[in-house]
Length: 482
Ligand SMILES: [Zn+2]
Image 1: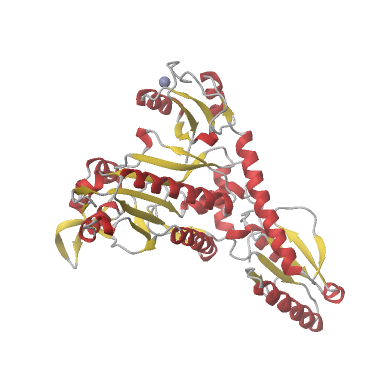
Image 2 (image 1 turned 120 degrees about the vertical axis):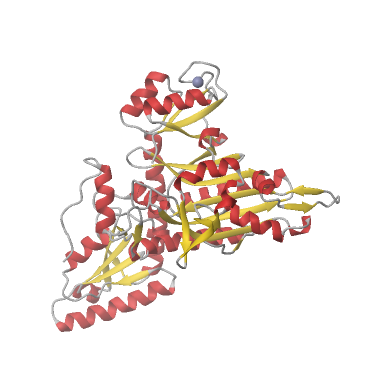
């Protein structure tokens, strides 16, 4: 029997709410192996929708999918100094195979730069082989002691794009293009607004020249890094001797980028839109966009109602709407409503015997508002309209919430008060010194999420560092983060 106890509210305990929501909606579960996550069908369905949308966007920008192995020779990781320093502490290492100790231990990939660029060294000879634009969908392993489903797990699913280019400018353009693809996906599909920009040196990817990031603000006013894109320069091509003959006949190292998003996005979606009733899924990513719940008492009613329900289902499916008819017997309609609400289904249609006679259905929206009786005729167009509206409203609501939790031009006192109080994004001047950044992190746990792109910057640029008072070199967005 479904658990009908109310979730802990977001206001009472956001973290407990998050965990209970995931359990209630059957999105994921803890595994017998500490730190690992089991993604249940309802959670995996959201990931699949995300994958489909992103995969098409990658292909539309000229990328192809490939697959590289799970195991990486341990020595590969050491070839790029910053890379090994960043990743060695969290790697899982295989020392035995087939009952024998291995000559060289194998690292379970924490990310695939090293193995992929080792292969690129074989595949790239000439400028004619460039650009090489490859993506892989895979799992990676980064040893974690603290588990938070979807947000921090030892094994997670992701995609990692890896490209090679003939010039630095092309690599930079690629890194920025993919940041833009992520932003579009997050805004248009997840209905999740993000601030884009560059990471500071202390926050950039191990081995990158520049890291760009999409940063979102969750409902508890903590930031979540939702996707990153890296300009790797020639760091890896030098380490792995990925060279090519230029058009002029010289030998040069290629310029690389890598970029990734992960199942963390499912956690981001939950914490952006979920409410005290459970998950709220934007229609474009919902497993079922419309759920039909038939209501009947007698066998005659059952036949009539189900006939109509099936006809409506066919009509909606014909328009490409993902629709589910919940025909489970022995479960009361109210229990079904409750279940689909907790799972975040955007639209619900309730059909009883009187509705069948009237040629109507009752429409309920997951985002609230009064139930409404709507005619069966023209229902597919109406559902498409409702979904478009809901998709837009979710983005507008999340954007308004983020802006309400952001302060600009903050002084040190305002910065401290905001982070100790409600939390959120703080836009303020930054002197560019790592020492200042480290001190702030130690004292407040806040980090620079990004040095924001132009369109996110404040109208008046700050002139002094919010912390130390020295001249500001860039506006920074600070927050406590996941
Ligand atoms: Zn400073």
